[in-house]
Length: 161
Image 1 (cartoon, rainbow, N blue to C red):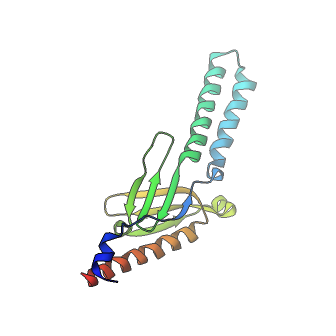
Image 2: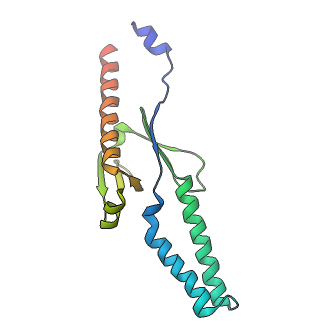
Image 3: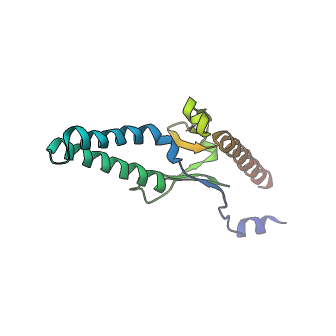
């Protein structure tokens, strides 16, 4: 393989893993909102402005949280990590592996029980938190493995040039 064939082939991005937050991450939020809906019906009634306000705000929050969960995507590729958070973000934000400085995992007692956790990826400028990730330790290992592979590809390319 000569130098010309390396540069004429386009580098294609391969998706290694795609994942999204778990709905179990928000169990406490859903419990509080369900209690507020119950409160709106039982204590204030649906005919009062207070009951109707509590009911509408709780309903809108539940819809927004569910939309956020189902529209948030994290992609691990061979070139970096792509992030799209929330229902109003149309484009993926890209984070290169050379920008990643540190990856930490935080798990509460309920998160450990549900086998989910929060994965925090630190760069020089920003910190990205992936909430409610299933099997966060495996995702961390995968990102570290891909980071090493990207470093090896860069050093191999430098040696060739």
